[in-house]
Every structure is written in structure tokens, then in C-alpha cells.
Length: 331
Image 1 (cartoon, one colour):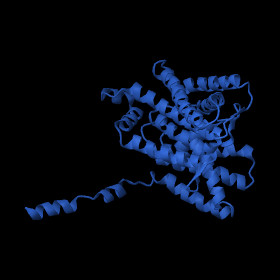
Image 2: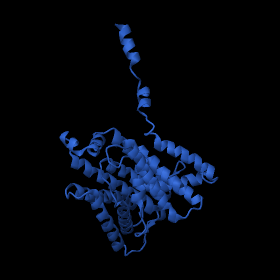
Image 3: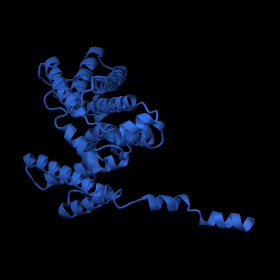
Image 4: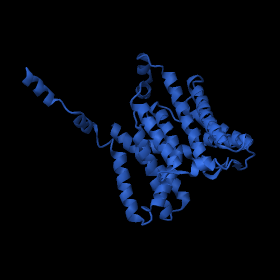
């Protein structure tokens, strides 16, 4: 009897072996692409591996990367949000207005940061309400709010740059901790929280089910509208945090330029990271890798002297390639 138990235990795969078998080449594709890109970048430019340059890349990545984390949840749910750039500008302007009203001190900064997260979640809830209760497709609803948010931003700021009078606010965006900028740490911490939420909670499982097949999910007693609505709130929350990181860096924000094309960068990071645009599957760490890949591409284009007017075309080609690879894998 003892020998039988030992033999049955011996043939059962260990946790490590099961994890190794679960890894496929397609799931590792973003990481492999990142490693190849790092090697090529180091070969092309001697300035790429300079610590200051790498730190700047990570800082630039963090602003859109934070938004991309929230966008991952929404795309897995089967939706999309085109208003995140305009939403960031609106939240940024409102935060600086709140700061200027409250005055100096860290208490004012903390209140303003809390307000930014609440405002972002509120604007995300508006998009969620339009899609769940208003029955408007996410593409059309967020296309409309993109214009609305940007117009309100320009109106309340008189289309002029908003400057904070709180000197402590800039410490949030320009500060360092253990050699890395604060926005990078915020990006990484949110990624860890997002991974736990997506992979180790009932909400994460329900999210994937809703994105795969909403009808089947509803038959399984999953509140599809609630799951979808919460994904918009999560995205809005991350937009609010990104607005704080961006506006605090220069202690000001430009209502016309802030967040411009951030929706493109966020969606591109999610898609490059392996999340299916059709919904149902995706990973947070894939999005992190996708955001870093985009940052390195932008950095290499700048170091190589490529015209900034062509950088948008490169991003577009990268998105097309990522989507085509997903289509080929689905066949």
C-alpha cells in the first residue's frame, strides 16, 4: 500500500513542471521581443545603456503605462476607451485648480491627489454608465466623451497653461526612491495590484468570462453589466493617477496638449503585450512589457535622429503587426 502511494505521488507533476508546461512560445512572445529589442538598441546606439537614458525611458513609459494597466481590464472585458487622453487633461487641470484653492502644504497635495483618483473614477463611471445603462457601444460613447472632456478642459482653463502655486506638488513627479523616479514605482506597484486583481480574485475570473462570451457569463450568474462597469471605473482611476504623475512633474499642465494620443499608446501597449482585442484573455505583465517596448522604440527613434513626425507611423505599424500576429494565432 505504501509503495502504491509513493508511486502515484512520483508520477504526479510538480508545480514547477506544470508551470513550465503552461508556458507557450506565444505567451512569451512579448518578453522575447523586449529582449531582442534591448540587444538591438544597445548595438545601434552607445547612449542607450546609459543609466540616465534608461531612467528617462522608464519615466516616460510610466505615464501611459499606468493608463494601459487600466485599459487592460477594459479590453479583456471586451470594451475600449478612446477618451483617456482628454480625461487625463481634464483631471490634471481640475487637480491644479484644487491645489491653488487649498494653498501650500502636504495636506493640500494629499487632498488633491485623492481628488484626482476620485475624479478619474467618476469620469470612468460616466463612460461605464453610457455603455451599460445607455446601451451605447464603448467606441461611440468614449469617442463622444473624448470631445466633451477636452472641450471642458479648454473652457475651464481658458485654453491657457495651468500652473500650480504649491511648490511641494512637484516633488511627487520629480522625486526619486532607491534610484528610480516615483512615477516608475507607482507604475510597478499598480502592476502588482492589477496582476493580483486579475489572476487571484473572483472579479478577474468574471472579467475574463465576460470578455470571452457575455451570454454564457450571464447564464453562469455573473452580473455582466457590473463587471463591465467596474472595468471603466478601474481605467478612470488609473487615468487620475497618471494625471497626478504628469502634472506634478512640471508643476503645471497644458490643457490642449496634455494626454494627446495617450489612448493610442495605451491601447498599443495592451495589444503588444498579448491581450486580445476581442476580449477574454490578457495579462498585466504583458502590458508592462508592451509599454516598455513602445518606450524603447520611441527612445531609439529619437537617438537615431528620426523625424518626430514619423514616430506615430512607427507606432501604427507596430500595432498592425501585433494585431496580425494575434489573428494568425487565432486561426
